[in-house]
Length: 312
Image (cartoon, rainbow, N blue to C red):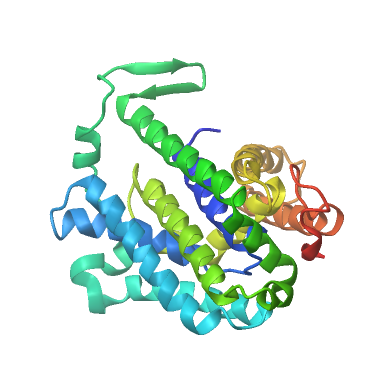
């Protein structure tokens, strides 16, 4: 429930809510933003010797640049073409990090590790064990979770504040009917670009939090990562402030539950398959659940149909 993965996905899904839920941008490249945030953080520390917090800022800057490079040629495209372009851009980013051409910085397919010293040195919690029951952590584990939750809280507050502002009302107007907003003299392209940058920076922050407790491996940033984030967003509610956080919590609880239950059922002979096949079955179940969710409740658990009629 409080793993760094859950928190990182919640942050990225909050950024995707800005893209899709409020601006109507069909972005399937969030894995690219997360990869850029994670690699920028790690490379800043390992290759340039920068402090960990500067690495976080570098990830935000690089996510902004990626959003600008991605948005300038694509934001005038129709929604389906935008989806194709963004998923291709995310794959290009992953392949660049895998390429041996930049091995000096990225370590190619092996990824990066050993960049944790600075972040752990900034840990305000003394050595020891904290929590109770399943929520028992050592000092480093607690620090990662607290930092991730603080970042998530800032992102949620930012979305809440922006969407209550005139800027947010224009953005939601663009989502519903951009021609009508354009007829009022608003620069639709500029608003879309701003939304892409804000959501992309949140995606980069999610990637940095994702990388804090472990290593940065390019195989983690495949298209399945983007689809997981979309599932989380639609589960909680695309045009909601707290929906992405709730969706991430429910999604990873279900995934962890199925990961334990399905192989056990296979081992007991209840499921006619091997334990490895049963472990993969959870992705099939999640996919079916996503289809049913889109068909019967596209507004998500916290959303309402009036707020997200454009999904249909």
